[in-house]
Image (cartoon, rainbow, N blue to C red; front, side):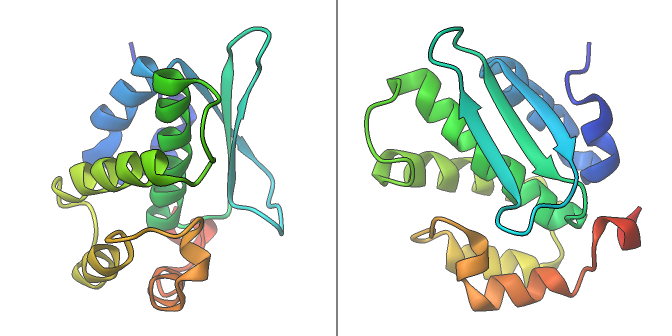
Length: 149
């Protein structure tokens, strides 16, 4: 059974099986929400119930949406593996994020210019791809979700 549901409309189809697997492995619920000006995605852990909820902005184009989802899934994976120990964007998260991004990149879902920017950015990922001027501008060239759907 697919756990990606509505997410399929926002993702390159080649990566859906892997994303579906990760959502199941990390016990995550994903919600698509209205545009927020201060963030593209969010991962919240309920300490009492252990539930992990990821929210993603509906207006991200499919490549930014995918990178944001992977960013948040990396938080969920680190949480499942180590609990609340460590910094949210510390070394364990960076290592997991890098591994997950390159696993998706190997599926051939990104255009060449995005692949090159990903190679550069994810050598030492920042807390957000928006802080990387080059990657951010390349992703902007692919429009918004309403342009790509």
